[in-house]
Amino acid sequence: MSASIAFSTASVHGPEDYWLRDRRAARYWVEPQRTFTGDPHIDYGLSSFPVAIFQPNRPAADTPIVVGLQGIGAPMEFNDFIVPQLLDMGIAVILFDTFMAGKRRVLRDQSGDMLDDLGEMARRGYALSADWMGTLFAATADDTRAALRLAAERHGLTSDRVALFGISFGALLHSGAFSKHGVGRRLLCVGGHADLSAMARGFSLSWFIRKAGPVLTSRPFRSILCRKILGLAVLLDVLDSLVADPDKYRAVNPITYADQVDGGRRARFLVGENDWIAAPREAERCAGQFGDGACYVVPDMSHDRFVEHTPYFLATQLGDWAW
Picture 1 (cartoon, one colour):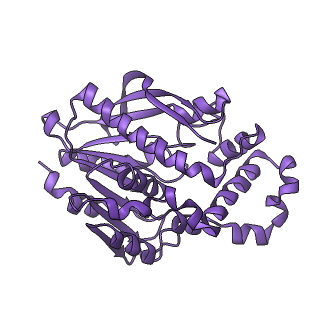
Picture 2 (cartoon, helix red, strand yellow; picture 1 turned 90 degrees about the vertical axis):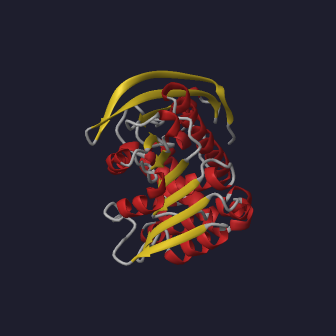
């Protein structure tokens, strides 16, 4: 499954007022012309997305920018906790929904999550495979560029002091935009890193699920499973493929391009000592492959307990950009 990405023909609707943590933003709806599957319902659900732009009271052209991405399947609102701190530092914040998260879903008119979306796509004959990861990384990089272009054109936010901030899966996606696609001057990852195969190994629960209930994910039974279980089966297949044959996906793995990032662009990773998804040893290895990379391991931080540790990380990594 491939994507034809053409933001030059994107429609932009808005802005409208949007609030997080008592801070006002301008929210837009971006509708790019993209074809992922040929199914208009799926393609529209995956392509169009909301963008929220928070701007401090500072000359726009001199204002640094942080673009934030959240974890897998999580809405952009999950990054609300970074907004007040960064605005108070004089740094603009851009948030947008990633694939199958928040308002960017195949099943927008129904409750559910990304597993339901994956299941619906499979039911329609478009089961995602690990080969789609290249499209996902490229599309996310283009989404980030589009959001930055929107901020420049509508808000005068033209500074090249751009940091890509990501949590968990968002860290992996932004690692691709940063290392392979050259977006941003700083990469700030929390509970995540730049190695696709290593992150997939952490995400994959197939060893447990398949031992506990192999029938649920076996191919002969998928046609009669509920949509969420079907989506889970698709996700596990993707993760297993990435783990089983990392060399096959080397070209789409962000860490492959780490040594091409020049020394003027820095990569920083914050992980918990007991993080079983973004393992400290893997994050440290990733940091070592960047010309200017560093990893910080926090003893009492885990994959789902990071909010209290993030403010200090942002303050130290962006303090020289504050007003």
